[in-house]
Image 1 (cartoon, rainbow, N blue to C red):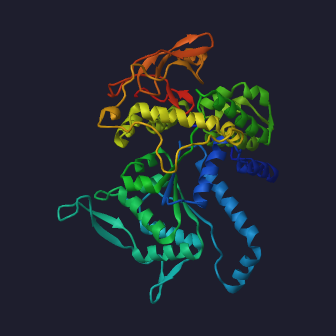
Image 2 (cartoon, rainbow, N blue to C red):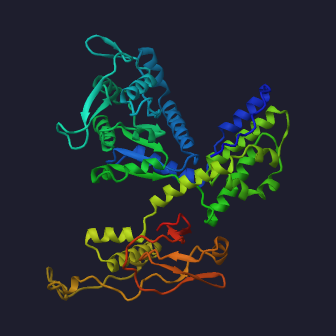
Image 3 (tube, one colour):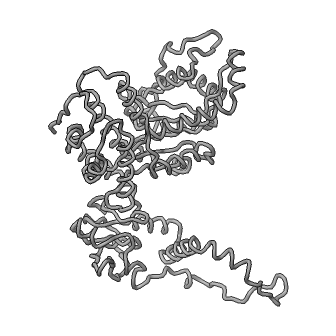
Length: 498
């Protein structure tokens, strides 16, 4: 694929004032809803891991994962300094090291074929300022490298041997430092590089390594990266139980609230631009900004920074649409990013057929599960009213003696345990959060039933989209059909395979 080269920024030296204005804009981070929600979830996981050994924070490239990492790191540092300033001073006088609430590192890609754990230990220790550790004598951490021979899956003499770069003494030194310095969490940016393993080593070994360090130190590890981290989701049941997943999504074009939020983010960033800007005129082109950022705020911000830097370097005072178009990402690059994001989102989509498989594993009938869903939804909306009713309604008296059972029929045999098979699926009628205009714009009216997974053509009646009554789908084979799929409360077009 041919690479489209963007014009180079003028090498003219920026004045001190222009450089300061550019720096201020680069450091500005807009607090948008997706960022705030992920911040809340990640902070809660750091404060109380609740048995989780690791956290997976994943999302599309350029969504703002590194921004949230730096934001949380800065907040924890400020909290540590403001809470114990006198203690930090006294520790400095005594020559002792202060506590470090978070260890933030970028996971570097391996120079060879496999992730280098020894290099990871060294980088972490140097970040703490720990350049030596005790062995009986003082040993420089840049001393020898330890390569261990390990057998691949299956073990035994026939297992495929693999070079596994590890250093037990460096690991123990890092674990001791994590405990001594009071670290709460280790945040690993670009954590997908952990998946780079040599032949003969299982991927589960990487998670076992992190879980072991968490068990020894009590420090949770947060893996931040792209959708490649989804590979770690289903390695085995133990790995799934010890891991918490946080999704950092982009803003979706098919979701009207997301469209409004994206426009608000664009306006906020334009208001921070240190140049004259025709904001209203540029906002009219917000679909173009969405197209060339694929709905990722990080991509949008970097784009604006490039355009502002070029304008300042040329000595101009107005940020124009022509300048922004000059520094937009090429269409081919945007297409590649969008395909990668859509692929990850499709993998996250929990289809109705997969949920029914979970019900079968748990011994639940589809009718029972749907009834429970309806009860949970009803109780959520009626929590406040139910609480008030409990206070006002008198308690009904009973005339039965203590220990006497209420009248009722006990289930006998298997007759009442039979799985119910309704003639019609429970989902039909008006479709919420999907308009006829969206169907017309996409030129597609096929919808996947969120209950049974069946695909039917919806009809537009006035301003309402209706889904036809239909029998529950019984054939669970994959259907290669482009259709609308409900994700949470919204309808999207994630892909063609459902």
